[in-house]
Amino acid sequence: MVTNRTTILQILSFAAAATVARVDGFHIILAGGTGPIGKTLSSSLVNDGHDVTILCRNAFLAASPIRASGDYGWLGKSFLEKHPSIALRDWDGGDLLDIVGQDFLGWQEDTLSKADAVINLVGGYTIQREMAAERIVRESLRVNPTALQVTVGPKDEELSMISPGAISTKVARLQKCEEYVSFNCINYECLRIEANRVDEECHRIKNVVYSRLKE
Image (cartoon, rainbow, N blue to C red; front, side, top):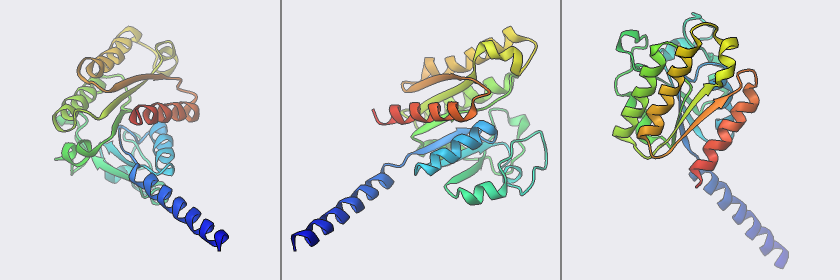
């Protein structure tokens, strides 16, 4: 009888722990998350039991069975079917002249307002990167000012290998994106990663986010 009672208590305890794990799942936004880093990071996050929304310029193209254009990020239909906790959402990326998706209106309220963390993975080294960073910070402060803001960029010393030319301009642009966060947000992390270590760096990004959210 004691053995049966102990077994029941163990089952109930396990069930309670599983319920808590689901309740404690985070909602994490990845801006510009349709590249290699976003794909690796998003799958890892949902495998840990969290919900992920990826902000992209065209959700239709990102979810297509085959890649339709090299100009836009792509995850693929099979990847999204394998990870149903990953959602795609059109957004304007900070530049109203570069909208491709048809359903970008209201992305702030749909995504940022319920986010525990917003991870900025927007790539490229044009003014678009700055505009996207500014847009994320401004809209987050409006609808959810306490969300953890995380910027991710390459290390300065790797820029010449990743994107040769105009290095000083690109370094300044990366710094500007970090300043949008550090000057305006109360809860933030600015991370620099090694471009050729995607798996390891995604693991580090994830652990930093978990550590900050559990403080």
